[in-house]
Every structure is written in structure tokens, then in C-alpha cells.
Amino acid sequence: MTEISPLDQARILSEALPHMQQYDEETIVIKYGGHAMGDEETAKNFARDIVLLEQTAINPVVVHGGGPQIATMLKRLGIVSEFAAGLRITDAATIEIVEMVLAGSVNKQIVGYINEAGGKAVGLSGKDGNMVKASKTTRTIIDPGSNIEKAIDLGFVGDPEKVDLTLLNQLIGYELIPVLAPLATSKEGQTLNVNADTFAGAVAGALKAKRLLLLTDVPGVLDKSKKLIPQLSVKDARKLIADGTISGGMIPKVETCIYALEQGVEGVVIIDGKMQHAVLLELFTNQGTGTLIHK
Image (tube, rainbow, N blue to C red; front, side, top):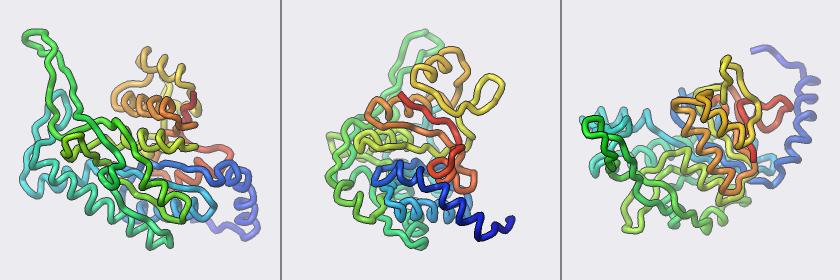
């Protein structure tokens, strides 16, 4: 690491002022997951950045995933997952592990790192305080043999339907940092696993967040020649999906961004979470990072 002179440090802090003012007292939802969670050092740097946001009068809310950790635990316990149309079917044995890993080990690890960095994190899931109610996800696939559309039951997997802010409103703005595991309850009281991006979009929308940051393992949305697109309107994003520029796993991410904007978020940014201090680069510097999607 290159040494920065004290004068340069002071200048950098001074340049961050207009950005800090822009987000003063605003809520920022940060989706943190998958490979962005990386090793211990990356996780600790992320935690420090979140504490810094809270110190500058921004209200951060962290939503995390935990796919790799769930897969590791299922393997350790010898639970074999079934897949349909590329999606994991979450049966009763699997949802138990999903809840244990997401609301347990992963959630509390992030809480621990934030608290170690001097913050006051509170680990919750969408089940707490009836925060997120979800309905079971159904997907249809075309049966290759008969060409008939067939519904597939993904088990205990849900789509967010309703977000109740009672609990979050007790925490946000009181120096407490909510850290949310993407689990929800169905009308029947079942625990449902919700895609972390979708969960973050629903929560950010309900909170009318100034920004939703999706930390992923790609730099952002790329154009046909693989160059980063710094900004996109919803209309442009839809065009790029239609013409195939946005493809594969990026489609559901961009669709989540559009959904969050429709729910009331001001701007959604897809950024590379593996990059050091990605959150601070995005919020506190002129160049920002990743792709901002806006209405």
C-alpha cells in the first residue's frame, strides 16, 4: 500500500463533503453476498465502511445472502438438493439448514465484524416483527417432451409481498445498523427463503431508500464490447435486455433494480463487491463505481 501524506488525506476527506451532504440522514440499503463476502479481511473492510457511513449520519441497512455457505453446510450434512430448470428446490430438510446458516452463522458473523469495527449492528431476518411476508414462488417450464407448460414447485422459496417497517423504524436513525437475513414468513406461517437481491429491493423500496447498492462479483453492467456502462435509465436497461446485451445472471439483477425503482428507491447501483472499499468509492467520490440505474 502506498503511503498517503497527511495533506492528501485531509484533501480526500474534504472532497467527500458534498457527497456526505447529499446522503445526510438518508437510508442506504446495501446487498452484500456471495463472493463479495469473500475472506475475513474483505468482510472486515466492508464492516468498517458500513460503520463509517453510520458515523457520517447516513442510515445503512445491510441485507446479506449466503449461497456458498448454504451449499457448504448442505454438503457437510450430506443433504442432496434437487434442481428443476436450474433452480434449487428447497425441501423441508433444506429450509432448516438455510435458516440455520442465513439467520444464524452468516448473519451473526457480519454483526460481529460491524460491532468489532465500533458499530452497533442488530441481526434480524424478515421473520422478525413480521417484517417481510412472502408468497410461495412458482416457476413454469416448457416440458421438452410434450411442449406443455408445467408449473414447478420450488418448495420453501418465496417472493416478497408485503414489508412492514414497524421494527426497522425503531432502529434506523438510532445509531443501530440492521443486518437482515433474507427469510420471510408465508400467510400460513411457513418460513420461506427469498432471493437476497429481491429481498433487498423490497426492503429498500418500502424504506424509500436514497440508494440500493447491489454488491456482486462483476464490475456492473457491460456493453457489447465489455465496457462498463456508468448509468442507465430503466428504459435503456429494458432495451439492453431485449437486444441481448444484458444476458444470463445479469438479467435477474437488473430486473431487481427496476423492481426496486418502481417500489420507490431513488437509484440502484450494481457494483463489484470484491473491490476494496467499493461502498465508499460509490458514495463518497466523484467517479463512483459500477452502474447506476435510475428512473
